[in-house]
Image (cartoon, rainbow, N blue to C red; front, side, top):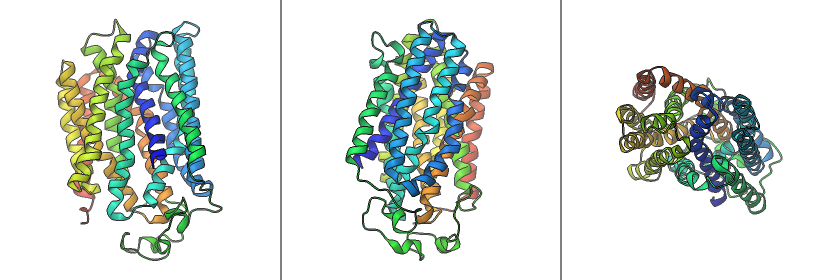
Length: 425
């Protein structure tokens, strides 16, 4: 579990470190804010389509192989992105060409890095019962949370002479290599010889499994869920069991992606740092770190302490997210913006494990790998366009951006109230 935690931790820390410096990089290059946000879109689109593919492949090739592939994608992406930005900032490439090449290099993360999260999630989900799955998936999600604390905290320290703003890219690529070596040498082999069924789902690493889950109704599963879908080879996005959870994840994810897309540029403007973009990494990192701490509070503290089920966690999470948008929209100081962003992040930290656990509990054990792949796609889909749309709204009318975020968050609240069954005790 320590290795699985490390896989998610390093990728999350690297990505949030990148988010800390990219507004400053874009300002240094003289690129419009919206084009910096759009540079992530192709990678996010690849993530949406590739995550389910890798999830299904992990059922045949094993979780370990897909985790390793995901880490390789992360290393390749960060190495190439760092090199391209280094030469672009030194004037070797034009600003436009630099961002185009950056977007292409970033696609390695969307195309291949997307193999790791569904493999990790499917492993955890297949080894936990219904009562414990929300807590277990919250622990997995908290590796992202811890990474989002470390990334912004370390990013300013990684801006070193000779590398400058691309320092975080080089250092996190090196950390990815270390994780890859440990993963390949220390994690037990788990290469199944056939598609996941029964025991291979519930015990991918060879531990004792509950094989009857694949054949009979279990107290840990909704009545009739396994038999009803026993003949299905592929889980559909339109499956009625998953539909409300996927819709909540998609709508709420767009609100979160818009907030993350806007926050760095907002800080440069509100703090008057456009003329000195290198100084922006510190405040942006501080605010992202405050949000990450709030996310950890939700996932490590509130969810397990209060025993929240999926619906409750999703409902209250998006309510808090909507509340937190207000101080971000109105704040003029670093403190006010950080507090508002932390409140929103607390809400998003409750929302995401809630909808992930809800989707997992809605399907049978044999469908966990496919469910994890669909959820990974839902997690990536908002980042195709939402950050760029949020920045475009922000540049034309700040209140259009804030109003859209509020509307999205409140839509999920309404969905929880009217379209989801109450959590089972």
